[in-house]
Image 1 (cartoon, one colour):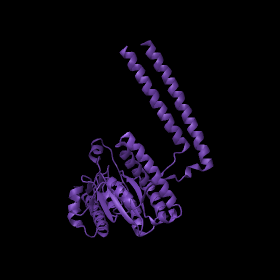
Image 2 (tube, helix red, strand yellow; image 1 turned 180 degrees about the horizontal axis):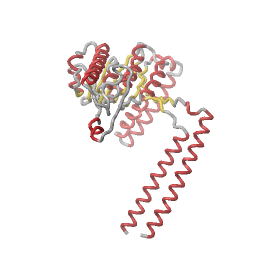
Image 3 (cartoon, rainbow, N blue to C red; image 1 turned 120 degrees about the horizontal axis):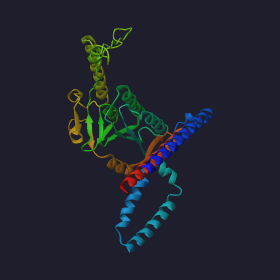
Image 4 (cartoon, rainbow, N blue to C red; image 1 turned 90 degrees about the horizontal axis):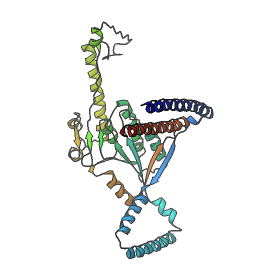
Length: 351
């Protein structure tokens, strides 16, 4: 027990020293970075061709299905064909490449605040700088269960920029595009969903607790002062009135009407009033009520797109600042240290 006590005291001193050192380093790095103006970095644009990925995958499977002797013959034939192709396309390579349309792939993984909107905005801006209307296509792999109205309104507006430029937009939903997620999906010219993807939930919800009775029980007064009749309707700590509750419901209904009008404008063939009751539909059922246009996974769609176009993924990755890198490294090191200590204590107890 004395050993464990001494070891624990030593560990506490080491951890304290490491934490203090990291704090000092991070503060210095932050000051240096602010002086250099590195905090304004827009991030790094990543572009990756998928045609080559799928081609290599297909060739790998084909080669491994052959016997060793057949594989040697296959490789020689492949190399010969590639040389002949390069030689024949040497003069016309640029023309052929320019004639082939592009399919730009953008990913959106939504949380309740639609936090991915900033990278979506940058990706859309980058694509619109090079995409050609009537020729190229944008495919959005969309996953979101919805969230804040204003946040998803902005995210959907980013996709509206694509359609506004006359560029074909396809939304692929493998798992879920509900509520705000479906608000984004309905912007697309075509919605493709997997068989059990969750879609719909065209509705609006708001909920909040009220602690007025708890405060009253403990003789705590809560005052809220407003200028404007409807500046506050329902509150968390105050006593809610029927008048305020009615106004709150009116605002919810108005938001719901705006949501339905938004969907109706972008999917005129959809009976919005029949599906805008807050219900959700799985992929095949969503096809029956025209919430989607086709049952297909995003993988199938991309493989098919590779046959008709050059498919590239476009994404922005924000570069971590120096303090963030140091903080991440320190956190990782501390987690490893704690894990080693716990393992040491466990082994000591076992012995």
